Amino acid sequence: MNTPASSLTRYYQFHASIYDATRWAFLFGREGVIKEAGKRASPCNILEIGCGTGHNLNLLCQAFPQAKVTGVDLSAAMLAKAGEKLQGYGDRVQLREAAYDAPISGGGAGGYDLILASYALSMFNPGWERALEAAYQDLAPNGRLVVVDFHRAKLPGFGQWMSLNHVRMEAHLLPGLERLFTPEMCRIKAAYGGVWEFLQFIGHRKN
Image 1 (cartoon, rainbow, N blue to C red):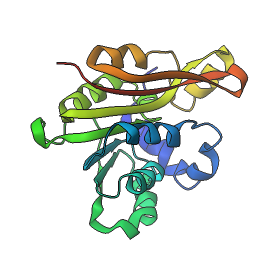
Image 2 (spheres, rainbow, N blue to C red; image 1 turned 120 degrees about the vertical axis):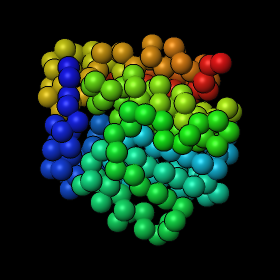
Image 3 (tube, rainbow, N blue to C red; image 1 turned 90 degrees about the horizontal axis):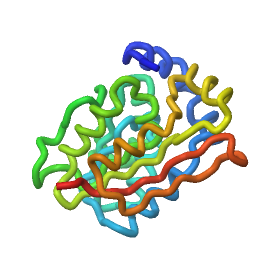
Image 4 (tube, rainbow, N blue to C red; image 1 turned 135 degrees about the horizontal axis):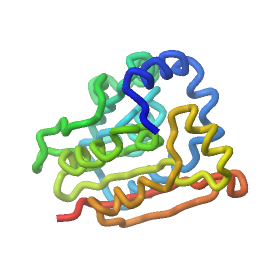
């Protein structure tokens, strides 16, 4: 399944206004994986890949009040919603309109010490492998990559329906994650009695 960036931009231009009201029934495990990350680190420089309307950025600001938080997203419409939601945090939060297909931090010790990808990588088709490679380079030496995303559709019909919404659910993300990152936590959980599975992953980059 190949989804050009222009198609995603058009998709979210429409869905930005209804995203928060509709996606809560699908996007499980977001709060939990951020709490797990907080048990392992106290990051000062955080990046979220595909930050959307800023739901997770708000959680990150609350969980890590000492941190500066950057959100990157392809959709101007989604970022506009995020800006409205996060204006109370002032210059703690920066929003960048871009595809995440290359490193943005310059790497090294000045990289991000926590990078979150929440239900984003499964929509980067093509592009999820480039995003993981960029995250590898953007991550500070002792930093952690945190991922929560769709894993696998156990009912083929559901997977086909989700593909119409630009989501790939073929258990393809975990092998890519494990190629570049050493897991500290890896959980696969069932949703709606096993209609699909979602993945929670925390890891640090391999040398």
